[in-house]
Image 1 (cartoon, rainbow, N blue to C red):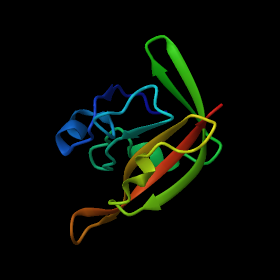
Image 2: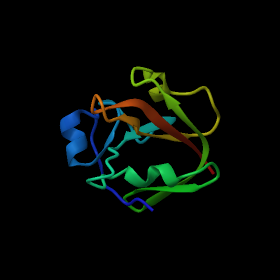
Image 3: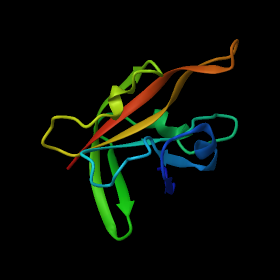
Amino acid sequence: GIKEPVYPGPATPEQLQRGVSFAEEDESLNDQNISIAGHTDYALNYQFTDMHKAKKGDKVTFTVGQDKRHYKITSIRDVDPYEVEVLDEMKKNKDQLTLITCDDYDEKTGTWLTRKIYVAEAV
Protein backbone atom coordinates (compact mmCIF):
# COMPACT_ATOMS: atom_id res chain seq x y z
CA GLY A 1 0.00 0.00 0.00
CA ILE A 2 0.85 3.67 -0.22
CA LYS A 3 0.89 5.76 2.95
CA GLU A 4 1.68 9.40 2.29
CA PRO A 5 0.72 12.76 3.78
CA VAL A 6 -1.21 15.00 1.37
CA TYR A 7 0.10 18.55 0.94
CA PRO A 8 -2.01 21.57 -0.05
CA GLY A 9 -2.56 22.24 -3.75
CA PRO A 10 -1.98 23.13 -6.42
CA ALA A 11 0.17 20.20 -7.53
CA THR A 12 3.10 22.23 -8.85
CA PRO A 13 6.42 20.53 -9.65
CA GLU A 14 7.83 22.03 -6.43
CA GLN A 15 4.94 20.76 -4.33
CA LEU A 16 5.15 17.29 -5.86
CA GLN A 17 8.84 17.15 -4.93
CA ARG A 18 7.66 17.37 -1.30
CA GLY A 19 5.11 14.62 -1.74
CA VAL A 20 1.54 13.83 -2.71
CA SER A 21 -0.52 16.99 -3.21
CA PHE A 22 -4.11 18.05 -3.75
CA ALA A 23 -4.36 18.70 -7.49
CA GLU A 24 -5.97 22.13 -7.26
CA GLU A 25 -5.40 25.11 -4.99
CA ASP A 26 -9.06 25.26 -3.94
CA GLU A 27 -9.37 21.50 -3.36
CA SER A 28 -11.54 20.85 -0.31
CA LEU A 29 -12.17 17.74 1.76
CA ASN A 30 -15.86 18.53 1.22
CA ASP A 31 -15.59 18.34 -2.59
CA GLN A 32 -17.58 15.63 -4.35
CA ASN A 33 -14.42 14.80 -6.35
CA ILE A 34 -11.21 15.07 -4.31
CA SER A 35 -8.24 15.01 -6.71
CA ILE A 36 -4.77 14.05 -5.49
CA ALA A 37 -1.57 13.93 -7.56
CA GLY A 38 1.69 12.14 -6.89
CA HIS A 39 4.94 11.43 -8.72
CA THR A 40 5.94 8.15 -10.31
CA ASP A 41 9.65 7.43 -10.68
CA TYR A 42 10.94 3.88 -10.80
CA ALA A 43 14.53 4.94 -10.00
CA LEU A 44 13.63 7.09 -6.98
CA ASN A 45 10.54 5.13 -5.83
CA TYR A 46 8.36 8.23 -5.49
CA GLN A 47 4.98 8.25 -3.70
CA PHE A 48 2.77 6.87 -6.49
CA THR A 49 5.40 4.63 -8.13
CA ASP A 50 3.49 1.50 -7.04
CA MET A 51 0.11 2.79 -8.27
CA HIS A 52 0.51 0.74 -11.47
CA LYS A 53 -0.18 -2.34 -9.32
CA ALA A 54 -3.68 -1.06 -8.45
CA LYS A 55 -6.65 -2.57 -10.25
CA LYS A 56 -10.39 -2.06 -10.48
CA GLY A 57 -12.08 -3.22 -7.30
CA ASP A 58 -9.11 -2.40 -5.05
CA LYS A 59 -9.95 -0.57 -1.84
CA VAL A 60 -8.53 2.86 -0.99
CA THR A 61 -8.63 4.37 2.49
CA PHE A 62 -8.17 8.13 2.77
CA THR A 63 -7.53 9.17 6.39
CA VAL A 64 -8.21 12.73 7.51
CA GLY A 65 -7.37 13.09 11.20
CA GLN A 66 -9.48 10.43 12.92
CA ASP A 67 -11.86 10.21 9.95
CA LYS A 68 -11.29 7.23 7.62
CA ARG A 69 -12.98 7.47 4.22
CA HIS A 70 -13.31 4.27 2.22
CA TYR A 71 -13.35 4.06 -1.57
CA LYS A 72 -13.17 1.38 -4.26
CA ILE A 73 -11.36 1.88 -7.58
CA THR A 74 -13.99 1.86 -10.34
CA SER A 75 -11.95 2.98 -13.36
CA ILE A 76 -8.36 3.34 -14.51
CA ARG A 77 -7.45 5.16 -17.71
CA ASP A 78 -4.77 7.22 -19.43
CA VAL A 79 -5.46 10.80 -20.44
CA ASP A 80 -3.56 13.57 -22.16
CA PRO A 81 -1.68 15.72 -19.60
CA TYR A 82 -3.85 18.70 -20.58
CA GLU A 83 -7.16 16.88 -20.08
CA VAL A 84 -7.94 18.65 -16.80
CA GLU A 85 -11.68 17.93 -16.68
CA VAL A 86 -10.84 14.81 -14.65
CA LEU A 87 -10.43 17.25 -11.74
CA ASP A 88 -13.96 18.63 -12.03
CA GLU A 89 -16.83 17.86 -9.73
CA MET A 90 -18.93 15.06 -11.17
CA LYS A 91 -22.70 14.90 -11.36
CA LYS A 92 -22.82 11.72 -9.31
CA ASN A 93 -24.49 10.76 -6.07
CA LYS A 94 -21.32 9.19 -4.71
CA ASP A 95 -18.24 11.06 -3.58
CA GLN A 96 -15.07 10.09 -5.37
CA LEU A 97 -11.32 10.25 -5.02
CA THR A 98 -9.32 10.84 -8.21
CA LEU A 99 -5.67 9.78 -7.99
CA ILE A 100 -3.38 11.10 -10.70
CA THR A 101 0.16 10.11 -11.67
CA CYS A 102 2.38 10.06 -14.76
CA ASP A 103 2.50 7.19 -17.25
CA ASP A 104 4.19 6.19 -20.52
CA TYR A 105 7.73 7.47 -19.97
CA ASP A 106 9.54 8.45 -23.17
CA GLU A 107 13.27 7.87 -22.73
CA LYS A 108 14.11 9.92 -25.84
CA THR A 109 12.49 13.10 -24.54
CA GLY A 110 12.68 12.39 -20.81
CA THR A 111 8.98 13.16 -20.43
CA TRP A 112 5.87 11.32 -19.34
CA LEU A 113 3.43 11.25 -22.24
CA THR A 114 0.17 10.57 -20.42
CA ARG A 115 -1.43 10.81 -17.01
CA LYS A 116 -2.85 7.68 -15.38
CA ILE A 117 -6.18 8.41 -13.68
CA TYR A 118 -7.55 6.16 -10.93
CA VAL A 119 -11.15 6.95 -9.99
CA ALA A 120 -12.35 5.51 -6.68
CA GLU A 121 -15.96 5.87 -5.51
CA ALA A 122 -17.04 6.06 -1.88
CA VAL A 123 -18.30 2.79 -0.43
